[in-house]
Image 1 (tube, rainbow, N blue to C red):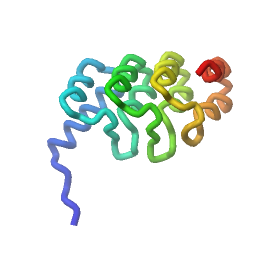
Image 2: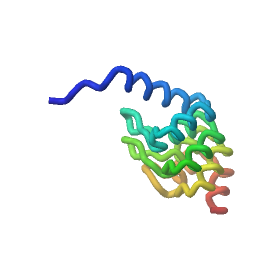
Image 3: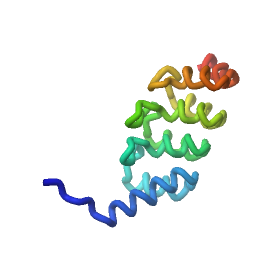
Image 4: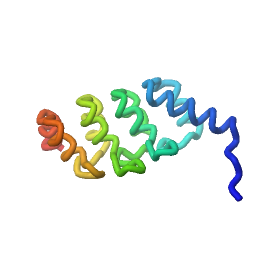
Length: 130
């Protein structure tokens, strides 16, 4: 029999995911520095990096990567933060992820495939530099 999660833990996790979505870097990294895993994921497998990347917060992405977050961590649908940033057209986030070691060919669809699908040739050019 599975135990129900502690409501206080769920509330804290919800707050932490919201900080990533909103790009509240200073508050978020305080939690990570205090012991919250940099690769914490939600019920869909979206990591803190994925949420920050998808919502266009390059500074938050950089801070999480500096604290050991995986730039290529896929969610439950096989998507990477880099592909999410490409989909949203977030060039600064794409650059931060590439500098953090993200692989443009990882995931399904990959960031390369996503850039091609949406005609984001300027981002394809960035991949060639890394």
